[in-house]
Length: 162
Image (cartoon, rainbow, N blue to C red; front, top):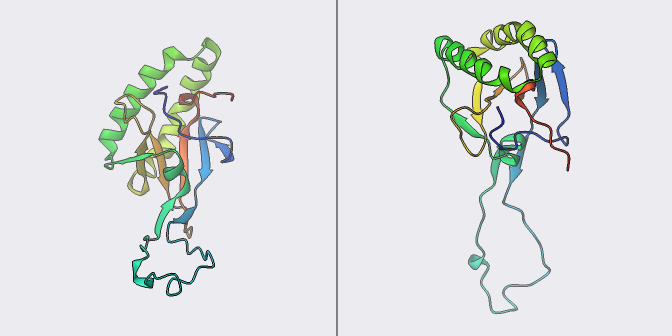
């Protein structure tokens, strides 16, 4: 559904999976803050004390979550997830053109099963607006991965050309 929230941009390449129903995007942990900038000043020579500088804490964030201000949601159990997907499919289908509706109806059950198979490993996110009927963004860690993989329902995204 189009909530108006930006969930992804073309600076994050995606891979189509599950008959092009889902987009898979690799996220990365990045460090923000705690940048030590040497401006060449000598605090003691300028009457300042070294203790006066404010230490900014380094924070690890996931690039996609940070860039698009995604808001993590409580996890879903299987029943809640199925209820969400049925409602989402019902709301999204009429917004698609006729050709896309047919493809969507044909392939979304398998994509839903794929997500359901990972339900215990998924993190759930919504866009910054946190709209009730907004698309969920899913994240999980592939086996052995240290960075999360994000999954988007492709037909729920609206491409905006800038």
